[in-house]
Length: 177
Image (tube, rainbow, N blue to C red; front, side, top):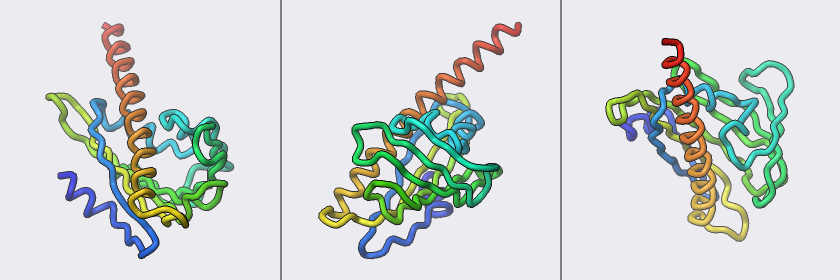
């Protein structure tokens, strides 16, 4: 199933000086909770641990731009990102980095969210893929390793936050009875 989703939604065409990869995460929380976090282009800090602040202008729509402040410890302080794709029906979000003081040039990513059953309960399959230029002085392997590590960290945090929200929803529905 993962391979079908990747071939359908995660079609990057890396050039010779670029690398591309995809990361898969199974989350033990319903798709509506996970998607509510992922689609929050204007609030990525809700689950992305390296983002300290985000600001956007106007309504959230294709072409919207966000200015992100990155926490210390990473080789960047700011990133400017544009919303390229937002499909609430298919649960697809696409972004492109258009500026910032980092080395991720021509970075573009797609994240898709799919319902699945995990241990007999509603769960979510999340796939995030990217393409990015390989910075001068780095190899494709080093660049992919770095970006994959960032995505893995973000998706682990997404899983933790989603699971916490799902447990809070369960407690609220128990308290109603």
